[in-house]
Image (cartoon, rainbow, N blue to C red; front, side, top):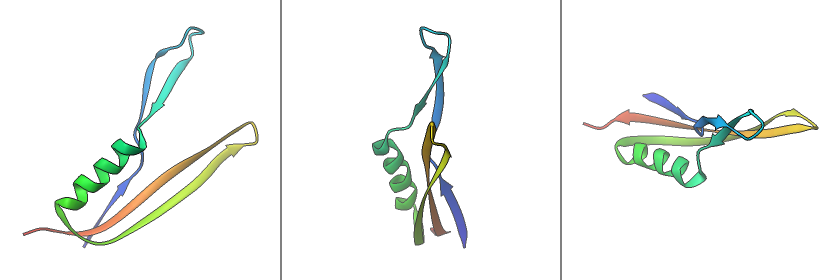
Length: 74
């Protein structure tokens, strides 16, 4: 058995008008598509989901992790 961990991708875009780099997160549709495409090509045993918060009261954010337990097809 193997595991595959998925987290939403982030990309740094060009600086905004104030010279601050802007981080753009992967959309939920794209994230779901990546996970579903992977699961369609593997024998999935289980899927586990975790969401965690981090930061402080001025800058609070969340991160999502999906763990897929699987076996190679074939």
